[in-house]
Length: 202
Image 1 (spheres, helix red, strand yellow):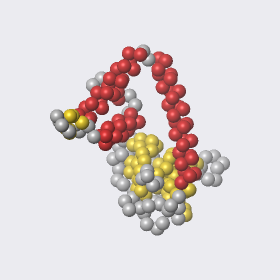
Image 2 (spheres, one colour):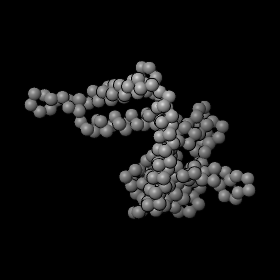
Image 3 (tube, one colour):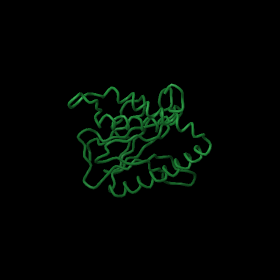
């Protein structure tokens, strides 16, 4: 694994493909520098073009923090993973202009990475579910209707540009891939800006 395998990029910064450290042939440390003038809350980690991980493995992504008082080893927080079928992912890490961060990428058994990703996802869904229940108990039903209308409006505006005609009589159709593309972008926007549907004009 001497060739570069992974790329990282924080918003507004150049792509990083060279690790700052390689503790062993399957572990890579990347230092993400501070942005010049603003905060980058997300970092994209991806497999470089033409790169395939060994069969049965995946890349585990960690946020690495300096050792705490009395600790010899640095602390690491599992963020997620990438690999065959999911060659890239976005991770929320918070890179501000007062100091960069360190990410670790480790090639590990795919089953182990998948298991931890499922546990991580379950934890997030539980937290999001409790928040949603709290919000629902405090929000009138009319607000839910408005949000639903805005979701439909968002989808309609996006899908309208993909509509075409097919078959006898020129029936108006929208390809399934267009809906999949809308959902991907919509989900990404919800993750990066959960309140955008609540603002007027969206």
